[in-house]
Amino acid sequence: MDLARLSMFIVKLLAGTGVFLVGVHQLTANIEQLATGKIKELFGRTADKRLVNVGIGAAATALIQSSGVTTVLIVGFVNVGVMDLYQAAAMIMGANIGTTVTAQIAALSAFPVTTYIQILVFVGIMMSMVCKRDGLKKTGAILSGLGLIFIGLALMSDAMKVNRDAIQGLFEVVTDPFLLFLIGIFLTALVQSSSATTSVIIAMSVAGLTIGSGGNEVLYIVLGTNIGSCVTALMSSATAGTNARRAGLIHLMFNTLGSAIFFVVLLFWPSFMEVTFRQWFPAPATQIAMFHTFFNVTGTILFLPLCRGFVKVSELLIREKQAEPVPTYLDERMLSSASLAISQLEKEQVRLSDTAMEAFRTGYRSFAGKDKALIAPTHQLIDRANGISQAMTDYLIRLSAKSKLADERSISNLHSNLGDIMRVAEIADNLTKYAQRSIDGGLDFSDSVKEELDVMVERIETLYTLTKRAVLERDAGLLPQIDQMEEEVDAMRKRLIDRHIQRLNQGECRAESSGVFINLVSNLERLGDHLTYIAYTVQE
Image 1 (tube, rainbow, N blue to C red):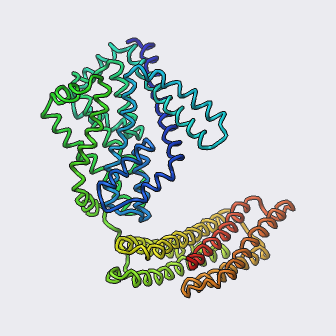
Image 2 (image 1 turned 180 degrees about the vertical axis):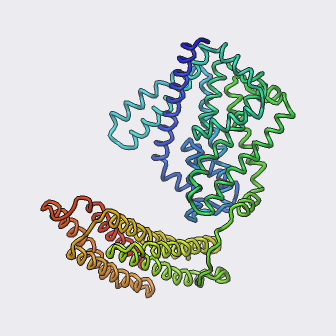
Image 3 (image 1 turned 45 degrees about the horizontal axis):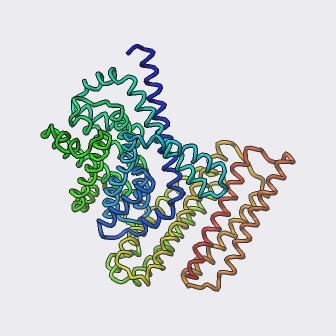
């Protein structure tokens, strides 16, 4: 193959791969948007039955056509305490089964009928352009994505057919199982999709190309893709909580162990492909897709009984960070009585909200006084709030597993309040950033502006006092006062911003201060909203 033909081959191959990936993205993104409610409903049905969780993981992945997206969702749910690691482990196994659907779709490209499927690009684009309903527009985008997948596969396959002899000579040389295994890992980690890598291999088979001697060699690449697919989950869990990182590790352990077992089997059974899938299915593309499905289903059957073992190993390898012991109302012995445990959680919630509000006050003083020395104490309070929040989340998970339906509303309210309280801590963190920017940029605010901000903060303090009373005393009669105070905070935000814009127009304020001032006032208004949300849980 001369340089010109090689360049043209690479261009066509990359173009086909690009079209394929655009199609997968179009398909995945729009199905995910259309099916968001169904996905949430599926994940909401988590149970202690492992087979049910496997089914949920497989169904969700088949629905959105991406195990990466499903696994990232699972990691996210583990991180916020919606599901535990045992449920997550089974769902991850199910997601691996669901992801093989994409390879099965790609395998259809071996049949002539798929040429007509490519017209779906035109049909889908016309639907997106003509239809006014959002659901129909997304359906059109899904159809065009499906058509693009087959066009991409056809482009790749055609590029390989034209240069089949030269390419075949290259791939016949690659026979080392370990090298092929690493190629599968690397390519999948690069594109972050095992389906994409497997589909490229399928396109090669449609073009009549074989890897190595045409035996088990292609299967080693498929095994490698399953390890490479773990990259997405590992990346999403890297900055998350301890349990989320454990979920990512479980995904890696499951795929690595399964691939290692099959790798050894293929090494000692050189004729595996010849006596199994090649006998059962006539088309090479179908053989590869079916092996992909067989591998993941078999791995799930083997390892599903070992879910607890995977969880234990992940807990040994990723340990909780040792924090200083802090006084707490949460007592393990109270978990036997839901009403007592909820009472203790409510006390702990007040402690958390006091800590978050103290972080807010310290952060505001840092901004108002341009005092850099108060930034570190603010972050210490935020860290303390994060620790209390995590302890409450873990306690709530254990309580929810033992509680009755009558207690679920209280538990749900506590979960909701946790989120709102931690938003207060986030706002405190934002205030330290505004303080730092004011100090670094030499931004000054007039005394009248500072007085107005102080008044707004006083209103928030009053709102917090009322909210705390309403929650502790379960007094819904305080809600009208809380609403009035929250409306005053909203009105002050609008008034402060309007006056700031007026001063800017009159040249009384520096333009650089706008970003800090407007964001600060908006954060104060948001804080009032979160306190009001907490107060309204007393109605329920």
